Image (cartoon, rainbow, N blue to C red):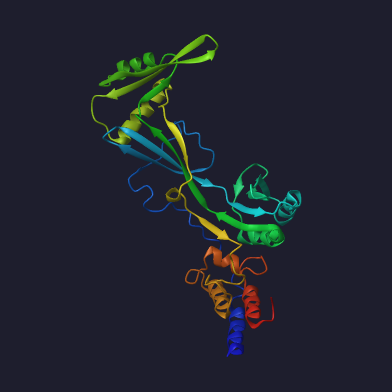
Length: 332
């Protein structure tokens, strides 16, 4: 029976071997419910956001009871290969190995662990500093190359998104020294806006011993009730006419409901396990060939691709043959 199955697989390989390996599909979308109560905004460059990575989307949440707001900047986090190695591992040698596999694969950082060893991360970065996607075959080849030194952790994180959120107690609240009051009063007078100016607080900041500079916090409060979008539009108009930027507080949020992407677990993976059922059998070879012939209908998961890529050269019919041989006991 097994010989007949292998014969069928070889025939399928002859039919499908000319079909190119489908491009990796990454789930880049934030989960549907993450920002269900927020408004997508497109005009945000004028705001002081302090974000570091490439911005994908920006969302505004607005509390009509308090007129407070939160603006979340969803960013693309660079792909990473993260793993732990033993204390006697040669970090320079591992970096050299990574560079031989992919010259753009660079050591991002390494930390000494309390239980001995090192925690290492690699990212793919061009000479100009632009981050690139890490190919699964690159991640697997590096894993095979350093496996003897890996402790209990080797993950490849792909297509990760995260958000930095700036919180505003009031979208037209301003903090600083100098002529804030004068600028806001001039804005109200020139625009004829029906609004009042409120002094929220004052503090003394000591720049040199014995000398203080007062900092003020003012709110420009419209007399009419505004939606979050209208309040943000007013803040932008104030910025364009006065160069005053609303005062906000930045919080980094690497939390589950604002991340999306794929995490590949190498340590607990099973070589050849294309369907991720915990073992490598003839069905996995079938799954590989089906994914090549009809990728839209029989797509493998990213973990399945990682497991099934025996030769670290992307998913091909050769991997199906290798899995058959493993199941038949011909190949380890």
